[in-house]
Length: 297
Image 1 (cartoon, rainbow, N blue to C red):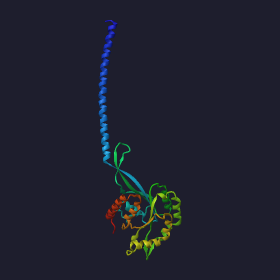
Image 2: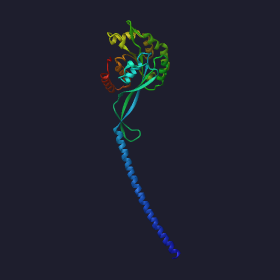
Image 3: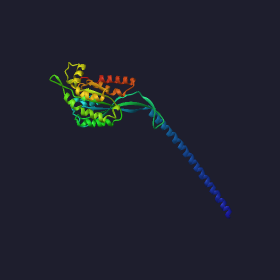
Image 4: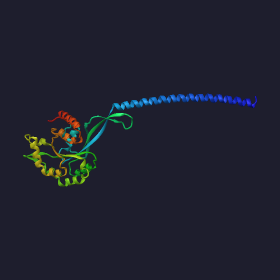
């Protein structure tokens, strides 16, 4: 066999091998392409299933209202906070709070809204939900400035509750002097200085006469309110100087739950501007009031 024939045979064999390998490679590429198509279809099905799942669930869009409690020791701030958070609390066993605390409670779910999901192409159900952050501070005078400074740092809607200590002994309302000391001119000036730039965030201020269960049983609410305002006139004047036009008054008792649901409604109502939503909220408050024990023995 001469060299030319050998080369020819070699090239022929090489051509056959290359052809076979090319055929194998094409088959493998075709198989891989088919596998990729199957994987893409499976991924597409999973994405579609994920879209359908996302469409089936409700997303909560939390909105916040900050409620800041001021008040001297024994005024009952912590009792109100605890009863709003856990209505079954036995306030007789509560101890004065030694430190600042913040609790969150959900108070209202608005009408559902359909919105596009930010991460996946799907329209989802969102439930705007109003939550209240309850800021409770110890009653010592030194914590007032901390409370004011914390309030200044809040950037959202806020409500301020001034809780007055109420008592009755020997035919007269007691603790008025302590209330006047706590809500002093110095205190009000601190509020004015610290809150100058954030008063626009404060929706309202409420003076709460707590522990009205200590007043004579024959006093109705109107008479009790008049007497309490007169007895605490010096403290009220100082608060009214700063919060004129935003000030409300409420009677409550943490022991009997009197007025607590109504106080919650007054506190939260400013954060629910739409009338239809406010009516739903008030209906929920009525249901809460019915299930909330009004007298504790």
